[in-house]
Length: 489
Image (tube, rainbow, N blue to C red; front, side):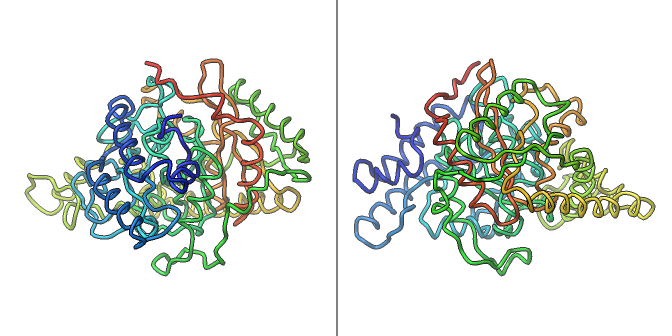
């Protein structure tokens, strides 16, 4: 097996047994990036030279006993909306094309403390707005399973990089499914943690009450290890939860006997692709074989969640992106006659089409004439969605639904119809509205060989439950051994 095909825990084992060195691992990834990045287009900024230099320094310190740590010298990729000191943080936007962050996001600080090597900043939909990574100002990322397909979004660069073995694992962010949906499309594992579990300090905000940073990995064990690294209370983030630190790897028991899994019928009806539905039904049967208790029930929130999400997300985006005015930082139009024209032209030229669409929608729902009719009502529905989930979790440990109603679609297929793109989020947005944890794991492929994702949703701060359920299924089905991206053209 090639070095870049190994999971992080397998790399750790080889480092421990002196079968591999830190520089060998880093070089293997740098070579892989050189070979495959031209096809996949996953990076906005590559840091391969810096990574090699860092690998040599870390290796020397490890050999001299100056530093210890199970993750020292392991490489990673970081979504380009997390601040990295001295390195461009563009959010895949012309607005921040040359912005170099003066500080590190808290998650980046934690990675540095563990002596993890940053291989580069990963492509995304501009300001995390989109579900296909086609709205990046710089490039369109391709799906490694089929280069004519989208990788999903907005963390499409992160998911594609992991699937293509350009990085062993990556960080993404999830506002309405932006970790889980691309993970589903690219056949990898993606976890959206409970709101507040991971600090958002240094994450360029799209919708502050919905955003959450999380791991995208090759398997569930890696996912639990990366979650261990990035969780913890942060005084710099007022929404950060002050909870006792948990070792999520200890939750991986490979046993789901007696686990109560609820299957909401609303998520298996109209709009769900027949092959996705069929594959999910087989996954449900597998859980029954493994000893879980399965019950169908009604969770009547799907119809309200999408509208609620887009009102709240766009309202918060409109507010958060107000700071990009061409004056303090970011893009400034070269020609203007007065202050009003400076604002207007800087924002018109600096933001892409999808970002403008959401700013306009958000400004509309926050305007004095419509605030009560839209934004205030959406917040009330948000409470209803949260309450419906709370009721369901009185009876079930986990809720099992598809991650996406379809597999990855063709590049260019939905960009001319924003409504169709928005409808693709139907299975993921309610998790963000309620602030719950959700994990997407691959559970099969369709007839064209494209991955299908299964989503497991847990109650607040019940990451251990969903990680164990995902791990148990993964061990019983061996997706990674059966299927591999083919880079079809």
